[in-house]
Length: 249
Image (cartoon, rainbow, N blue to C red; front, side, top):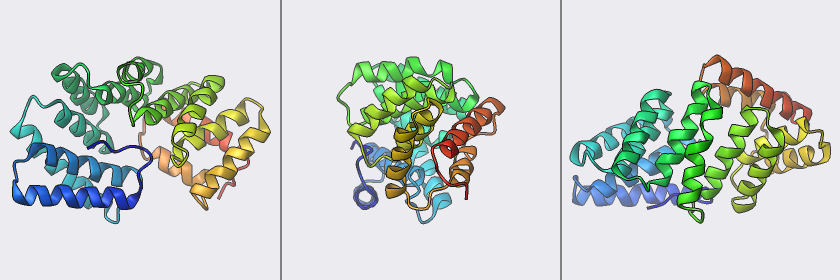
């Protein structure tokens, strides 16, 4: 199953239920184990979970079973890397994604994550190659808007505002409900001196995330990593949000 940025909470929960039913019939069904892990991690990532700690623990146990059953399964290592990323074990997460690539060099998701996770270690500049490979391998993938937003966010962390605007506009055009892209569109336009575009992005963001504030974003973003370079870059993006008109608290 492919979960893409356009799905909603109900679809994700339905997917988790279906995978659980499959596992009730066959506890060693590796595709179902991987699918359940994917549904649980999306639920955690998109703040749809009613029990984030419980869902994450289930995801970890589930994907460990999949890897134990099929150690050379590229998709299993991919999802284990995602779980490790949520646990903020970024170096280990990258190793899992690289293992997924070694098992299947055409695993576009693994290439994107292996590159993008370097952002959290303070090395955004090293992330483009992996994400670019993903887009070349599968340019029409349902995950392509997500990868485009990766490129945008990498540029934002490096204060490369024009490139950030270009890539996040692509991501947002393909997946308008994917609100993360609007953060970078607003901040990048503000830093680039495009006040009207920045304020329009904030207005659209607030339609999708009513009540979002600069402080709320900062708390969410800081929760990803304590690496000093990463934190300095996040502060700069947050200042761009303030410039764009997003209220402080």
